[in-house]
Image (tube, rainbow, N blue to C red; front, side, top):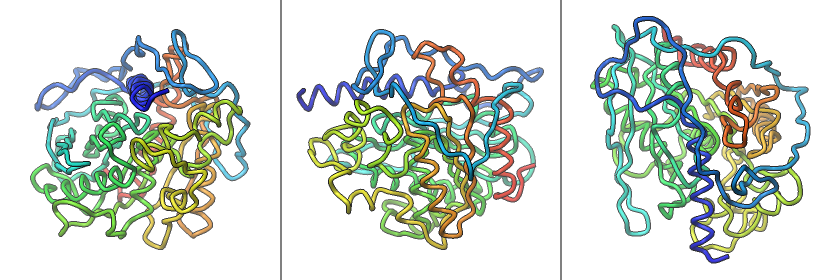
Length: 385
């Protein structure tokens, strides 16, 4: 397969994956969003064009990097959550919405990219703690419009929630650029905290899938100035808490729990993982490069400044091996960092409805799971309400 075709394949796969993780409809202008009474936070329909990209399984109409099998995960040091009960509901709180805010304009391989964020801020007196949401997308897409329902729910609990775009391999970027972008967003938002009404001293990152990986990297590199590039360098990029939902950690082992065909696809030169580590066109692999493997692993960066974590992963995740969250949680605990791993029983990799199950994403939008996240934020950011 040519490099161009591989890129098209990966982009198509990530498009569907990002769409599958998207929730609700587009935000409504820049005015407060209200509802007469609480209403369910609906998920958007699953993508009609299935992803295409190798791996052990196939979706209806095309192949995706989805494993045929997944090993049972070790839960002895984790909290198992039965994701039952009511779904989240929106509309209890008025929110001010600010969209298309340019937070950075980095140059990648000679091309400038305007990076934007959308921001939701609860109405009411007092500066709100800030949560920076980092969307998934297979390291190829980063749709800041994604997952609106869950973002809105968190905002309605008393948090300013900023959803960001970051550079991906489609921009010719690597994970170093992605981490730098997250930190640029944190610095920008701190510089504009008074303008938008949030507390610059209380900042968390919350990511899903590829975004979970970048959130983990941001939280474990607190104080590492090598990733602070761009504007507002007089502001801190450190975060006070990390929410990592089904994110990768050791990129050489993302497919460890899967069947042999899926492992081969993930570890191949030019795979979506290797492209985001080494850049487009490289034939190097994380498995074959110990130095690159260590540099791209959040666990390698843990030190006394690392933020507290919660890690959430489904035990039926067939995109990122469930053992990925266990590896990182164990490393955090061994270093004395506060970390709790939650295993969501029966859950997959977010909303994978395009595989034929329209309720695949339901566990992740239950009150039980979302209140686990907001409870952690309340504890670590000093409370929002």
